[in-house]
Amino acid sequence: MKINLGSHNKRVKGYKNVDALNLENVDIIHNLTEYPYPFETGSVDEILMTEVLEHISWRETINVLRECNRILKLNGKFHIQVPDCESMMKAYFTGGICSNVPHKPKNENEVLNHYCEKCKGKGYVNPIRLKMAFLGAQKHKYDYHRNIFTPKVLIENLEEAGFNKIELLEDKLKWKIKINVFK
Figure 1 (cartoon, rainbow, N blue to C red):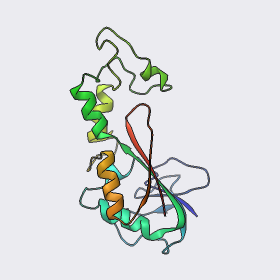
Figure 2: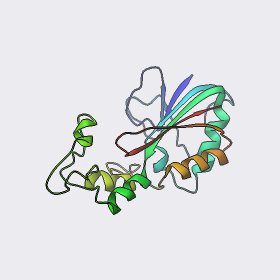
Figure 3: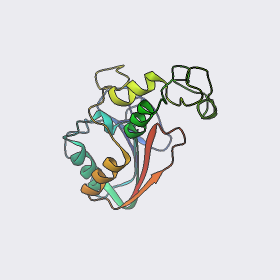
Figure 4: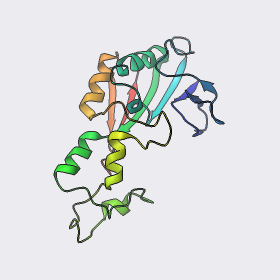
């Protein structure tokens, strides 16, 4: 079984969607801060958690990750993606914020090849993207950020939750932390 935790309404082929909201594409309605999750220990082959963990209180992060560890099968895979707040802070302090950088680029080249007179080519983060990394998009009651992550913090959280096979993936835009965890 493969599950997409905090799926909202996005369908990922081959995954059961789990979300707190009763939406069209949600298969299992469950709040991720209510334990235990409705899955047997060691019953899940893959967990997808894309742009979710930052919406959970920093006080609950380790509990959520421990619960993911509990339900994940031996040799299972857990993919996490969260905003990279360390990169966003660096962008802010080094002049990497520019309103002429596309907020929603069509591809990464639009950002990586950005040049304008305003930032002299140093910009790689739109100011709205910066706000969203720290505060969320704020489109509904669950769309607020309650935690921030740097690669180091997320890896430490995963280790505290009992994971030890952690692979940090590259994000060329430097906006996201992408991690694969193997059990």
